[in-house]
Image (cartoon, rainbow, N blue to C red):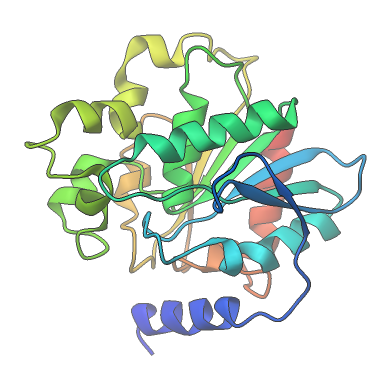
Length: 249
């Protein structure tokens, strides 16, 4: 079985999960402005941001096993939903900002794939307090992703054009560019919250180089594919859980 086939099989299993959902809460009026709560009331807060290449058809359902596993490890998990509007990427960012304002507290932000894009953006938001960030197999460079046609044009669809057509939009929502701007990462000294990327070298959906080329600390998981990093049944899950603990401090 190829890595892509293995990824497809794991995603199908995650999508077919029949385990319990979290407690549903709302942070806005749109149907996608909701979140699910898992875990102990007094556990350390982890905000989980799901992936799906920003496609409106792919919601948080496949991330529920991940959320439950984090809750079983003692975390109070907020599994975030957010709007994914082709041609209007900023609404995804502002939704997650609204969620954080609604929660009224800071936590560790863990995002996978497209969710990794969004948590990296959260980590480099200059007008918000710094937070620990763990980006799992993130689409960390939107310009490269667009030019490599990753996700069958998913990034171009989300941003609303190519990097040449939407220069300012990419500058706004591309983590690679945001983290290259000095103002964005001011204050990330030795005592600042940790920002870490973790990526499998067998990933057939988001290439490893998007993480290893990123200007932040990264960990390569030898043999892991795209969904291994969010699958509690994966042999890599214990390592991912260690990384959550390390980042959370």
